[in-house]
Length: 503
Image (cartoon, rainbow, N blue to C red):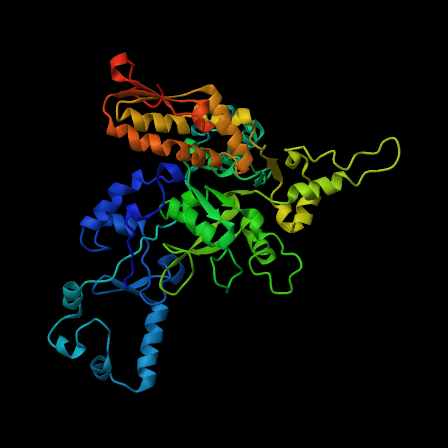
């Protein structure tokens, strides 16, 4: 193990999809790797900190490092403890060298006449890890002019996401205000961040909205799953792992990570467990552990790993300027809302029928903090998520639009696949309506569309490449209902071929 450990840019989760900005660092990293040795280039000393070989603390925490051959650095504390141990044991340095037995290394007795530096050159040093220095802020890292206005953000979201106008407005305003808060340091009024809680049925577009937002803004974004989080000391991911993912998305740049966005999916899975006598290590304890992250605090997170251990260095990340977006389906929340609404008077002229809300598909629009507390979320956790928005359950018309309208619509994907075989694919409107109805029956939202289309397109994708004379295939309602076959036209009919997915 050495003072630095390099991480290949291709191994770090980032890029345009996650909002990571890796382009600026590629050329710099290449210079370091091509130099052959760490610490020899001016760029190394300017951009990266030295890490102690023994305690793995950075130079900013441990102080000035002692340079040793083989690109190894040791802090003064570890060096002093090592010398004290040798002096206290009564063993001479020569005896210690003879008795050393290092796995996968040659016998130390054979090193007579060989310098330690030559030995490291011959046998190499372990991998190195980059730890970027914190730069002194001379000017704001975020330029407010480069952040699009809320209406522009919503226009971009409309190109990929159908419906959910309220959720798109909430996200657009929250992100814009977040970066205004980061870019402008206001002394007289302290602006607090507004973390967001998204509630909606499965397949309504919660995760897809955040992923699309990341592509639009090109800012560091990490998507974490709350189902694997547990209390510290138990099997599972520690709570700080969500910040580790953001640090990796920001190319291990602490400054960029502190201005990023974290989306914690499946947040309803950490609700307080009911009627249990065992310790709730993956429920209420996780909510309590996340309080400091949502509020804003200094958190020590490992570099290049999801859990803390003695083999990786730690860096401090301040979560004060990180925007947290939490999302979950909250199954069973409808029954809690319905029970609260039915508590009104059931006798007299103003009585409500108990089945009044049974047919209401968007009961989540009426959610209150009381309903979420009854679901199992603790009040301290909800207090740090002041903005609550609900996503509507997808209707038949919305599902048909999802099939056709977005830039990467499912139908456009299939049309592009068959266009590579020079075949034109068409869908009748009645067929699309039947597909949407089947998706509603499955009750899994937009995810059901893909599975239904895969079922009906299997034979078509298998048979079409057999005959090179087929020019056009039309999916009819009878074929979806199982009463007929798709309509096929041969090339002799001069059917125009499509050349792109959007044709």
